[in-house]
Amino acid sequence: MPERILVVEDEKTIAELIAEALKRRGYRVEAVHDGDGGLYAVETTLPDLVILDVMLPGMDGWEVCRRIRENPATKGIPVLMLTARRDERDLLAGFDVGADDYMKKPFSVNELAARVKSLLRRRSPGETDEKVIVIGPLAVDTEKGEALLKGSILDLTATEFLLLEVLASSRGSVVSRDTLLARVWGYSAADTRTVDMHVFRLRRKIEEDPENPKLLQTVRGRGFRLQEEGAADENS
Ligand code: CA
Image (cartoon, rainbow, N blue to C red; front, top):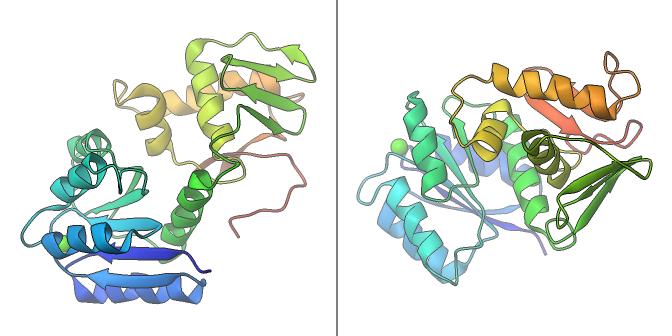
């Protein structure tokens, strides 16, 4: 059964571009071109994921997202928001209303497809419900709030643990610096260099050779990925 994705985007060329790219990857895609119709489609068809533009005729994307989250029947559906505006406060608002991820326009459809895949996998059973996430020699116990490397408890700060937990729960998928900032720091830090600094420190604790990381990898231009070296690149 292919996963069903709803695209809510009033710019029809963009909606078609997204729909075509996702259909090629095996998803079933429906597109709606205004906010009210989008919310109605979410509530009636219960898609597996929603791609939601912010600026829409009628109800805007923030409001649609807020209502998706308010409704017990739809609140678990992952929402990826598209924003044309560059203001970081928009991103903050996006996470405030409960968006799972966002992308700034213009974006690459390949990157969009990678985010979609990652969100769907994060949602699927056995991924998010895991209490202990094991990646090679690393075990992240999300319930106890501790991480072990080859069976020994790592001495991590709260921030380092949270960073590791977010990366581990997206195991094998790239997590962008902006997403890490929002999830780990909640935008209290405005600078993505904060992310790099903590990744650097985390590597010194979990990597045998921090200069040549085998677990916490940098994906140029996209972000970071936690996976065991040699595992298949699930994003390609
Ligand atoms: Ca729009």
